[in-house]
Image (tube, rainbow, N blue to C red; front, side):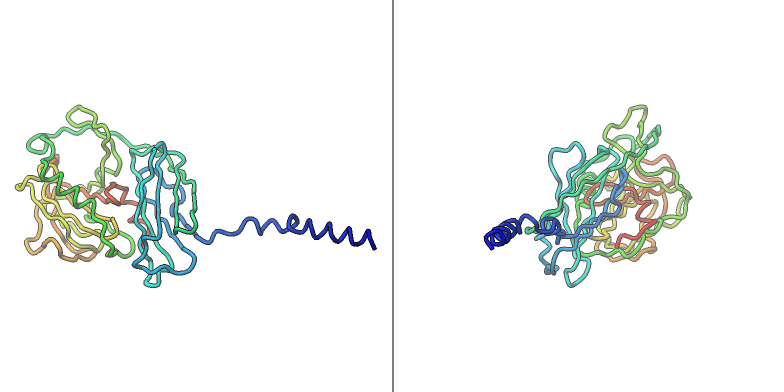
Length: 303
């Protein structure tokens, strides 16, 4: 009996140490999904966040999404927006640039209770080089007026999501310059520069349409000082996503800043205003002020 009692006492004492391993490695309650999980330089990354329980859609401030680029000392924070009225899931969109370093980066998502740290690999991408000769007014550089107006436009983060589904090409012309090209301008290499959009070669006057639904947030002209951009229309698609359409020949007189437009609605015609070597449309797509490659947005819906 003494031996039996000693055995039972020993087993009882060891019970906490014999607990199943799974009890020490609980599943994270804060779920995070990335698409793509390893973006290429110049692509955007969608972060879908599924917190435990529901958050009021108006209280997304409880979520913190920060991204530390490879080689960077500080993280950048990005807003998250509800995907539904119930606040079940949220989405943040993170841009990368051709100028960003490739390699391992860190994504951190927190709901004030739990924090998820995810390693993200940004894939290297090779971009071609062009030599451009500019003459006339466009060769003199941008005016402070146009730089200020465009900077305010690119910084827009409207809570409303206007777009729906994939983006469409804003012109039917052939692509003459792809995204990310590095350039020499008049023989001088442009450091810290990459082609921040896609160029479509088309004839004067051919239609330019909105690539997705949004609100007209910028209209300005070469005659007002848009010496590089030329006649320009900027569309706010919401939640930090904007399109800029440059070098236009004409803009409808009925189109005003603040107007809502639908995907495919004409917003101008192709021209060669501003810093341009011939008739073409430049379409730039920006996420949180960073120019990203529009091609993935044309091939896959970001809803």
